[in-house]
Image (cartoon, rainbow, N blue to C red):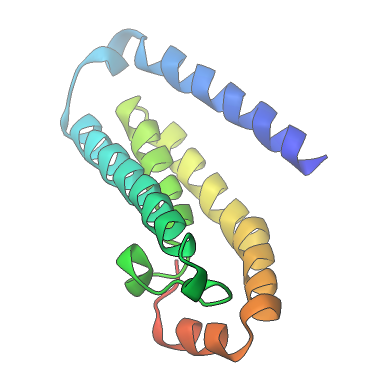
Length: 142
């Protein structure tokens, strides 16, 4: 199944990034790695804080069946996917290998656009209807 392939690729990618980061010329700390560390921290904060805020908001009965439009969701549709993409791109840059970082970034961006976000979009349209349509019309997308 797709989930198994995704998990296997993610584990492989984690191992490969650790291997690359530990080798020769890639061990030196430089500007690319600093940018990577910032992207990693920002993306982690974005993904985690969005999930915490959204889960807290959902816990109130009066919010049941409504579209969450607060926190990071005011600025971008599906901020958790964006955060995940940013921290994975940062992780790739931390290795010091720009080709690996670009491949990681492109893979995750493509996967989110073609699979994850597409499915979440259809689910949200069905569940929330016109409220979701109004939200996506005014909010930037990843």
